[in-house]
Image (cartoon, rainbow, N blue to C red; front, side):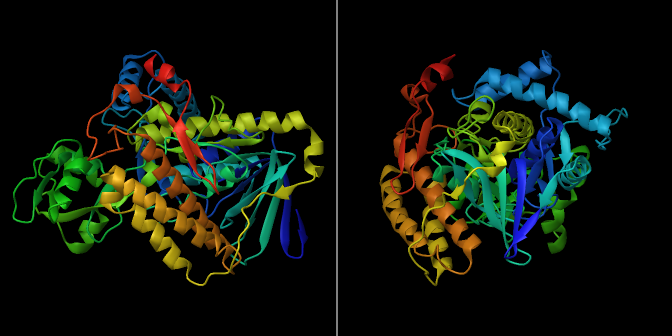
Length: 519
C-alpha cells in the first residue's frame, strides 16, 4: 500500500466491488485460486446489504436427486419461459458443494427436530461475518466504508477502480488485473430494509466501459411491509388474510403482492396472519427481526389486523442486471459480474428470484466470478500492475445545488405502484421523457462536493432509463412486468431484452434467446 496526497494506492490481481454474499464468495474463490485480492465495500462487510438484514433461504439439493428435479421444475414453471434449467442445475451443484465446505469450515447451520444439520437457511449477519473472517484469514484486503465510484481502463481492458473512503473523504485507487462487480441491484432509496446502499452503482460503472444489461424489464418487484416499517420479509404473508379498511377480504388473482397492490388501488390494506398454526408461529418467531415492527407497537400479528403497504425492491429482488456469460464474463475484457449485479433471468426468468434462488445465485456466481477473474489476471502476468490506466467515468457538466430534488424526480418515475407495479404504454412513454430530464439534471451535479452521492444519483438515473426502455420493448404482461393495457402473455415474446447506453439509451430483444428459452 502506498499513499499519494492522502490517496490510498493498492495493487491486486482481483478487485471485488461489493461485500455481500456474492462479493465475499468471489473474493474467497479468487484467494483460493492464488490471487491477491482487494474487496471494496460501500458499507461494512458483514452488516451492510440486503442479506445482512435478516435470514435468507438457500436451495440445498443433492445432484440428480428428486429434490433437485423439483427445484429446477419450480424455477422453470415460475420463470415463464425464460429460465434455463441447465443453468439452474449448475448453480445448485455449486451451492451444494460450497455449503458442504462451509459446514466443514465450521459455519453453524441450524439443526432440525431430528438433530441433523439444516442447510436451507442462512442467518444473514452470521453468514457474512463468517465469510469476512474467512477472507481476513486468507489474506484479502478489505476496504470498508469505501464506495467505488469509477472503473479504470487500459486499452479497453478493465484494470481497476477508484473510490472514496467515507471515514475521512480520502480517495483510493486499486490497480487490478480483473474486476468483479458484486455491488448488488438498485432499489432507488425506497426505504426497504437493507437497500440503502443499493443504488445501481455497479451498473453505471460497467456501462461506462460499454457493458450491457439484460432483464431490466423485470424490475417491478415490491415487498410487503407493515405501514411505517421497512421490513419487507415476505415469508410470513404466506399465512395471511388481506382485507380492506372495513374488514372485507380482498379477492384478487395472483400472489401476495398482487393482492396487496390490488387493494391499495382502492384504499388501505390490512393483514392478519390467521392461517399460521402454533407450530408455524413458533417457527416464524425464530426470525426475531421480522417481528420487530409488531413488537414495538404491541401488535400480535396472529390475532390482530395491521395495516400493510408495498415498498419497492427493484432489481434487488427483481431479475435485471449486467448481461453475463456462463463464467460471469461481461462484454468487456477484465470485467465480471456476480449476484444481484448480474441478470438472473437464467435462474429466475420473468419473476422475482427473492429468497432461495437469489441467495443460491449469489453464491454460485460469486465463486465463478472470482475464479474466472483470477484466470484472466494471471493470463496478463505481473505487467498488469504497471499498465497505463485511465478513468472512464462520465464527465459532469455542473455543480448543481439540489441533488435531493434530482433523486426525488427519479423516484417519482419508478417507486409509485402506477409506475413499476402496474405499467401502461402511455405511462412508460411519459416516464422515458421525464427521465431524460433527470439524467441531464444528474449530470449537472457531477462536479459538486459530494461526489459519491452524485454518482449514486447518476446511477439511479441510468438504471431507471434502462428499466423504462426495456419495459417499452415488452408489449405484453409476463411475470413482474405487468401491463394493464396489455394483460396477456404473448408466446412470440419469449425472449430476453438487452439494454445499455448512457447518453443515448437503447433496448432490444437479444438475438438467440428465443431458441434458448424454448429448449
